[in-house]
Length: 243
Ligand code: HEC
Image (cartoon, rainbow, N blue to C red; front, side, top):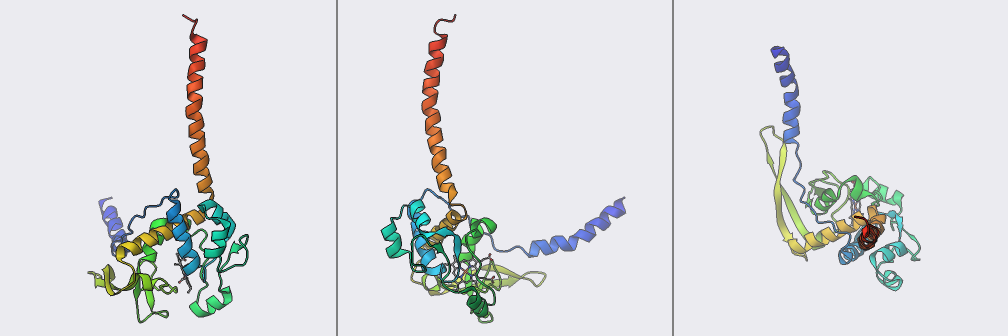
């Protein structure tokens, strides 16, 4: 029995060692707050300006987004409608899928559900983890998505960063941290805040009904609170003469 246990232990050891050496970078938590309308509006602005050229969000219409985020139809038309003609249109990418596939090797995926399939902390980390890599096709690589085909479209904001890797005992590259080689137009703090807004928006995009649900939930609670007062008074009235 003992021998068997030892054997079993030895059998899983390489897997354990592999798992230990394969850990990616730690994902910073991101403060998601769908009640923060200003943040969602800023995120929407970044999204239509910098992401919609390649990615679609094809379950969302411009006017629905405007309604949900408290942006008037005029403002949607003026500020957010670059990739479509009508506010009732779906948010489709500007670039035809076939061309994108030709240029990047893979078609940029629809981002409607990305914050649900990848989780918000991953998306937030992804947007902040691009680094220069002369060996990659686009000139960029990403620590949380190695060999990603997407170029760093926001490098003018973030600047160029270099990823520092160190070999561990098994000769595997382990990510140590970033070094800023050329500063961008934003400070690290401002860039993080902008990426938080964008991630917040992508979470909204994944489940727009959440906003409505929260609101209904609030009304229900207010109703219950008011109802409680009347129920209590009624109970007092009924039991007044019972002793
Ligand atoms: C120039 C075209 C282009 C632009 C602009 C662009 N992307 Fe991408 N993106 C791609 C491509 C191509 C991929 C697929 C990468 C792969 O699978 O290797 C991708 C992948 C992604 C992924 C990972 C999807 C997955 O499979 O998990 C996310 C998240 C993402 N993009 C977010 C964004 C956001 C947010 C923006 C706006 C700031 C943006 N992208 C702008 C081309 C683009």
